Image (cartoon, rainbow over all chains, first blue to last red; front, top):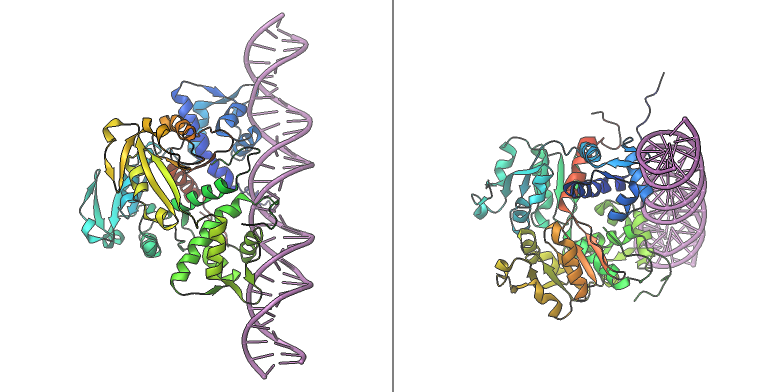
Length: 218
Length: 218
DNA sequence: TTAAATTTGTTAAAATTTTCACTATTCGAG
DNA sequence: CTCGAATAGTGAAAATTTTAACAAATTTAA
């Protein structure tokens, strides 16, 4: 029997670099740059050229030897890998300062992410209008039609409770801003961002920095 | 200060996990938990016990064999490593939705980070009061007294310009929310957070995810 | 006091990720 | 057309990070 070739596992670090490449490519496209070499690309985003080429190699061959990469073509390809050529609807739970800022964050929309619904646990916030969206009571979440992406921007103490509700409502991917770890069933993907953690890591390097080599980026 | 094994280079991933440990320890301390084993710790924050012990081992010996770690002691030690036992002042540039949210973000203060000054490029925002802080014109930044931490929350197109100003004003660590790479002189530390990137990475895993353990097909 | 049960700190192995080094391809000049 | 310069893709080496395994230390129970 012929075994299906096992698909190579793609390094997580590779995945996290793709949006960086994508963003940079969009930027240079605005300046009418049509082609870019791995060297140039690498220099501009602060990595090694071989890493850029290796990263792409997990997904196919997108360049032309001797020439480089077509910016337009590469945008299309990386966009395809990240599924950015579709519209992605998301719900947000928690419309405090951070949640409200996220709802008004213009760059989400540019990449096809749209926060189409907002909920809060605090009934005093229900009914408030943010942009085109009216804040709803979180208890309505399970009855609303299913949306695949959820953003949690509530206090840490409610993180797990909200996560449970989202999962029960069919959400398959969660972006967690609470700083608390949340447990989800297999098949649900979570990514966590904690702004305080980032500041703490920055602070560590600030106080332990040895001025040789280059500084930590990204 | 840490004298032991100062020579060894500490993995960046280790540093980024310290705030997670710290946060979790603070949480359980509130619940009056006095001791914790590496096993328990690991289970709760979603890593392997050996990784937790290894991470700590770069900085010294903080546990008691047979017993585990004193929560209080560990908080003090990790806090010391991250320099969280001091007050850290920061300035922010850009008081749009995100910048304003960051200024009101309560968790910064809990970890000793205080945004003591706010600037904007948009003169129409100058003079506005956010919390206890009044927004100043960015041109005043170089004349103000030096603050070591800077947060950039302006549109990507102004990122480098603002970074230059911050560096010229003596800022040594920058938390960059613009999504654009910024170049800084040696000795200045940068960490970048891009909320859209996180959503894109989440989206990738959402569309390519195969539940771990048994291979459920999709 | 001794033995069993825990659990740390650490060494070494395994796994992952980055970097190097080289081949092959393409373009453009002569 | 041929040559030289530029550059992609890739297998292997190097570097980094994670995981496993175990000796040593400590507590608890008898």
